[in-house]
Image (cartoon, rainbow, N blue to C red; front, side):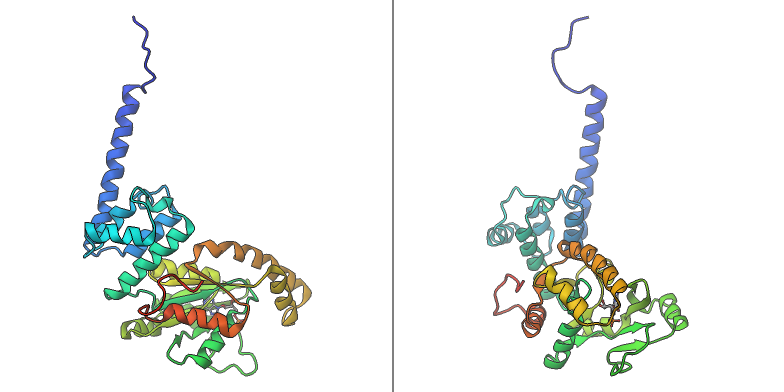
Length: 309
Ligand code: 5GP
């Protein structure tokens, strides 16, 4: 028998490979169709692409993604690509960090302008002791048009905390009931201790009215909101430096040394989540950080397209 010189794969491999390619093409076509008929939010597709760059959504070309969005034709796609500084050959999963931010912002704007949640729901999260509560309190005081979600918690009120303003203080049985009846948009056990959750009704009502809603919650909660409402904008509050975070945690004196050590370990893990977020805001000066968060919630017309972060 003559020797075969080519390095071509055996027939059976070629058949399997071409079957896999056909299946992947079909799956991508189904994603495009779902965007086009409105059964899937483009923001949800983007998120899946960022989470799994080699998955079905990640392998979608940016041009295919954009032109599947209703009312964005071929010409508009070309203009948008140039505006976002993304080359036509790029796939969603192959975008750099800035390009990801730009396409996400563009898509959120588009969704908002076409009746979706857009960036009306903003989640503010960040590592322990970074000052989320202080930034949120500043927003509550100085920006009355921004609605802050009031969480339910099983912890007891601290001096000065008001029922229904800072939290809804509930017992374990009531918290269990809220979970069972689907009243919470997300919930988590924070610092292995008490449970905290976001009541769903007020958030949905505010979005329906077209108001901006801010959720100040922990990182696990932010992830759950993302799953429940893929269009939510996630903002990560960063400390100016690690040393400053340590200083804030120890300086506030609300935890003993063992608990402080445990929270610092948690903070290290939490800081690693920064890339999952859409925007980062450094909490150097509270008023300035609050302004940047609020700015992300305002209508975009008349301000620069690229974010405050
Ligand atoms: P504190 O007890 O100091 O008020 O809050 C402790 C932590 O719980 C903070 O990190 C805060 O962001 C988080 N938290 C407050 N409300 C919620 C909520 O509704 N859901 C989740 N997941 N975390 C929350």
